[in-house]
Image (tube, rainbow, N blue to C red; front, side, top):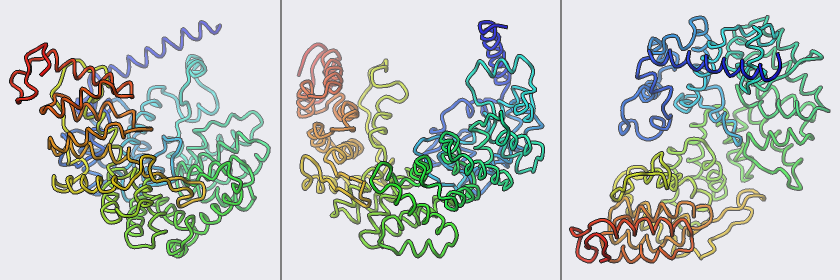
Length: 566
């Protein structure tokens, strides 16, 4: 069979798999189907009481009440009838319950070694990934051993060779290894030690996801033997934190005992999963060795973590918090908040540096609010915590304006849409309090911002910018629906520069669509000459609406019939 025929066969099998999935979904419970095909963000973020009922939200509530994910899926598995084969279900349930011992952000290149510990809700995205993997195994209808021996039906071997996909299922490998499957252990060992073995990333990940010390040992020996193989060493090091803390610690000790930190791939891995990016600095090797020493020290004795938290050394403080987060990121967050509010100024700075980089954005935003309130006279503290305060406010404004449609793809004209104070604040009064506070801060921030070189770490630079303040001011002004504040905030549009300039047209639309006062209309008219191209384009669209729609019933000063300017 030539390549053209193989491609044709693979395409045919692809269609058959899609039809099989579609047939199952056609008869699937609507609740479950919406869960599989819907967006995790619809139930993962925000206050539970403010979100519409859904399968995902009920799962989240179950987890918040202390339930295990497997309990919820066992109670609802009939809704997924035929999607995962019966013989795989025990392994599927085990994978679900194991997630809190794995990374919370496994899908990100810049991931950190933080684990959920007591909080399963941090894995709402991962549950769907696990479901998809077990569906994939069900779809192919072969056992795990055949994937290693290659003893597969010819059409499936052709399909795998012609399609780029995850062939080795890492979650299933971990569940089987935790069961002590001797046959699988032997096959994987042969993959690493054999002359023709082909080591896949997912095999490495599957081992780290498990608690199988025998297989850790295989990886450790491979790492030491891979001194001249940068690629294999990199694959092992980059994934050593992918699963359990136990597996990560085992590999870190191998690295320390064999002085493997001298290899660049090892140093890069340490930087990635700790967040201490000293790569390419003149002290890279020295810093990496210190990092490794602190990790092993913190992992070996909890008393050492407490000593490190009392230090004035940035790296010791940060790594102590990191070590806590390696087991339970919410506990680490609470310790960092406590340090930020009650520690020395340097400890506060380091705690803020830590807080803005952890994967619980909405909880962090709430804590950042208190830090901004309490330390609003310290510009370096503000520079370090600002990205967490009103977290991703630009994205919030963009979503508010356009939803899933995008900036220029919406069809219908809309009335003005206002921000919602409840996203970040407890009441309109609190929203106004922070609006006034940001104006107070902006009064002392120069045009170029306040720049802090070597903040917390020698290689880190932080800036408190007028742009960061202006976009948050705009959100608060819109949320308050106060015309005077909206006009004042609109006067700061040109301050939204740098990376935040992407959101400038969205901020302008939020503030100035369908102006209700002559002052708003005047600002909108001025925006037709804005230096930012996309802002000019949006100003034109808004002004065109003003000229073509009948505004006769609008307040005096902006009222005009269709085709006329007030």
